[in-house]
Image (cartoon, rainbow, N blue to C red):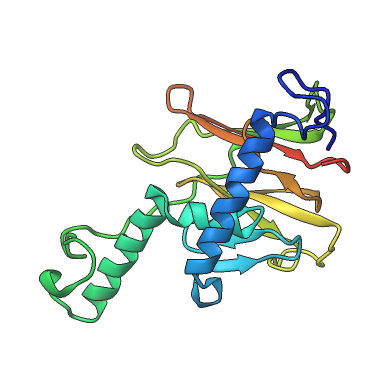
Length: 224
């Protein structure tokens, strides 16, 4: 990248790196440091799909590279799910709470498993979108859950063509799967291109007042 003519640079120097370049360099250094200390081959929750992305089987999240996945494993969501998994395994093995690795949790007798009666498919709209600056194409999904249970929140994941059993697998497509009790799970069939998970490119939003879930995604362009 030519940085010769940036503001603040000197003739003959490499130039002053911008904010985006600094962020890329910082993320790469953190990724290399994490890879030196963590062996992903021993992680039971990482899954590399046919698109080259990485999925967390524990949290059902999608990540573009190992660095993004490693950052996710240090976050609150992944750590909380690990604690819940450890507490459940401790109960199943008959280990008392002080001996378990996770904090004490209520027994299954006090917290009965949720049972929902499916009430049908939610209403939804799908809109094609384009970033005005980068000209990236993508989709905006809006799904309505007017009768969602109190405390419930929609969840999403990306599914490869060979994971589903509803139709003949086609490697040219993938699926966006959204679930929220007590509604039926819905899946949207989209082209199997690499999704841009960068800030402002991919986001989800749950409006608890209108009970509408929004998910926007953009594909990476050929020049990224």
